Length: 362
Image (tube, rainbow, N blue to C red; front, side, top):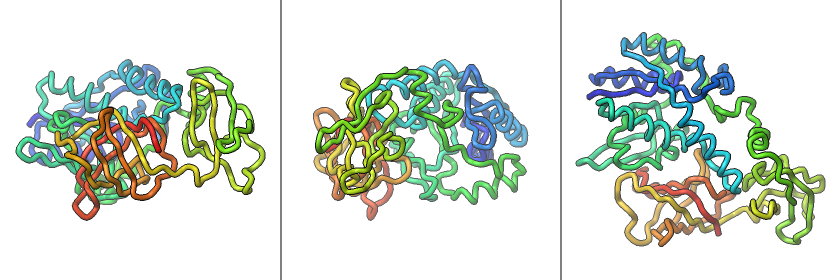
């Protein structure tokens, strides 16, 4: 099988490419250039998709003895990831740019080009397990629960998954690093990247203000309606946020306040107690069924609303406008714009049932 290995310059993608070679595939490595100005991306040990990373990827490809190319996806990355990120915050929602990058860049733009060039599949270093049975893909959590990335892959369609390989799904991170050392890959001990690659200093609020300007509004107590302060734009906040609110006095009970909701039209940011953060119901739109199996009636499941953590047992059903989910216990800090992923109940397995974008909470 002809396989295009997406090589970010990190240890995971390098070992994934190596395993694809070991499996007997005809492998070609590719690094994605995602910025017309590489210096604007995060650099150094915590880098992601930088010039340094492209050099690391090339060196790994040389050791593996596979062809290697750098493809310029900067324009599409700006349109699909950065502009979407900015637009979502402007609308009072909280996006996950890494999820968008996986969906729109690695498994849409990259896969489309790979198929057009005659490749059969794209291989990445994601920690998730994928099995195709009778042509039907099953996306499952990885064996390493701490590194599991099935959440950020759950928006992929069945057709995209049929042309995907995740060689690390049955491995722990420590095993991957040990294997990289045995293969004498220089990235064996390279630190993982964590922050948003297109915000080099990590200051999301300043980045958004530079893009969107200032739109002053009020910080309002959700219970009393009292105005507690002012802000320069709802894009500087997300549901569940506690720090950086600019409110001098604590709540009446002496405890911190949290962001409860955002109203971009009026510019209102409502704040309140931690107890008000819990939600028991979630609605979602733009639903994806990775195995092409929509829910049949009310279905018990486990839902996850953040890349790490934010899980609860639930009952989900298909609604006219997407998904309706009723939680067995409240979840805190659930924001519109985040993805919700449905898994089989823990006692039955770890299969991804479906995913959607959160549109409202109750």
